[in-house]
Image (cartoon, rainbow, N blue to C red):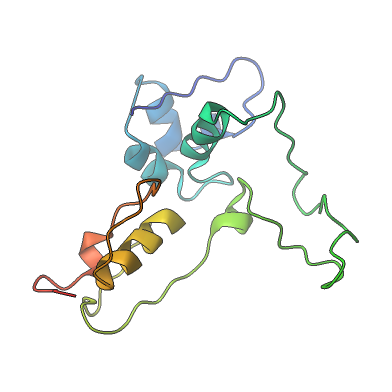
Length: 152
């Protein structure tokens, strides 16, 4: 459950250039949450957890290919929406950062959560709806976004 990152030679995530991630690189293993917070303002936020989940998957291939920034590997491939440029995610901040606004019964007012994973937003929605999380769910409910006395 802990992650470490050591770059030998080139640093593809450029974490050595950022004070917060560089500190974690020098200190061995850290929690995925620590890495998320430290890497939130880098070009590759949360990349360690995403990469570790990917390569641990039994169906992962032998190579991981990412397009360079601004390049669309599926250009002119999308039949119905032309050049969509949306893809199915990636590791760069521009592909991951999405603002979420929650409002309604059970949601705390005036709370700002600066770093979260999309999986955590999904888990929060399940909690608000009173639904159990599926066994395969990777996220955790954002407790700070929930009213203390929330009952679905």
